[in-house]
Length: 139
Image 1 (cartoon, one colour):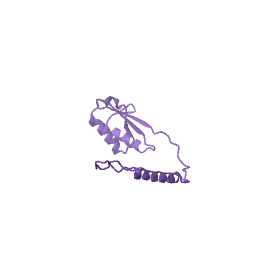
Image 2 (cartoon, helix red, strand yellow; image 1 turned 30 degrees about the vertical axis):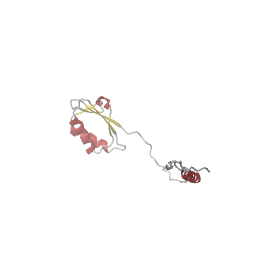
Image 3 (cartoon, helix red, strand yellow; image 1 turned 90 degrees about the vertical axis):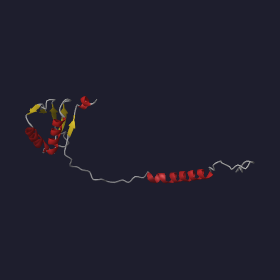
């Protein structure tokens, strides 16, 4: 094993001693090799299986449109006022599975009307509401 004692001019030696670093790395490598097979063992569990699942049918889709002049349409049929829309929401909210509402507001529709329709749907416990055709709003 070779060893350097410094130079003749009395300058301190600035070389790093890598022997302890190599020793630590070897210890870590051996530890990893020993513990790796222990971590790969799996525990087998017999979980209960649900045998009585009802067939999944897709929920009904309700297309709710709002025109630029505030006209609200329910699957293409014009809704005369908010009380009728409230009745529609009440009758649809009790269905199982609950229908999905696809809200399609016109780009020029007033925000207040859209907000009233959303608040009315939320008040009647409609949970599946989504906006469709929103690409015209991207700027």
